Length: 437
Image 1 (cartoon, one colour):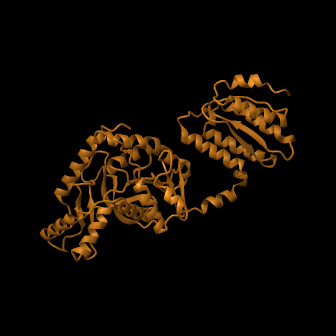
Image 2 (cartoon, helix red, strand yellow; image 1 turned 45 degrees about the horizontal axis):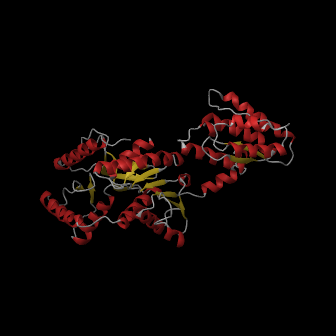
Image 3 (cartoon, helix red, strand yellow; image 1 turned 180 degrees about the vertical axis):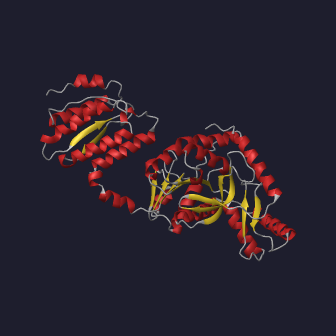
């Protein structure tokens, strides 16, 4: 059958790379002169148009020991050529493609703005071209299951690299991906490239994060903002481009937010991801809590008698200490004096990137290892301490591989703590209302 170049070119008139597409189809036509082409957009309502593809695939029955190229492209990208397996697996592939396309629109009907969906579908088709299908998937499944604890760090600034180094040092990840979002030459990641770390991959491709157990957001896109609101809005804009895609690639992950301001950025992440609140966590006051416990036990030599102390609330000046079950251990005045002294020592400690990185690694270890350990982290605080708005504050929480499983309620009721938390919640909520998502 003679190949109608002009006819194909007219059909592909809206495609930027139509000439490349025509050349590819001409090559296909030389090998398979009876090849017939068609263009359709199909979804659930127009699923019958898949018949053209099925007719094409069934036409391979008479071909012996040949692979076949199936071309697909969206108008703004270079055509993609996929090599399908030979006819021995073609029937299984057809059933799998039907099942997939009932769930997902074909690539060329997906808008160019839906990058994550496009890349995911490309990855799915690429998997098929490697011979990985439902009828030949055992090897692939076994390979994927060998990676039991994959962690992704998003952002290659000082904090992102500090988190990568701390997690790597703990040896808690079978695979650790650092997503370098910087433009042009790799900046902080160059040394990691030179002195390669075991199981660490540096990538600019968001799809490299797929199937992560924990995704850590360290991005701080503050730029040259003129106001605090501008700075936070800049971060929110960056998250709008990242979080939905990251959530798409790792749908069962825990999202751990280290970007600042942590309470607001955790709220932004929760809203953009549509994850359940127990799987979106901010690093909150975990570092302060660990430091406070150390100061009390090792600097002030306090006899804690197994009691636990946490810093809760909002990161910054309005954070407050609470002590689980201090009644019976010491008097209220003694407890107040002790914690005030400890908090004075705590305030002079800065939060350097490497310190935060160690704290992040501590949280990741608890989550991946399902330790069910209590940490003071930013969680959805609505319903606690009389808070009625959707805000994130640090509260002592039991963490495991499904995120937050329980919020610890201290036995001591103190009105000043409640008042401070409600004030922080009101202030954060008012500011959140000004951030555009």
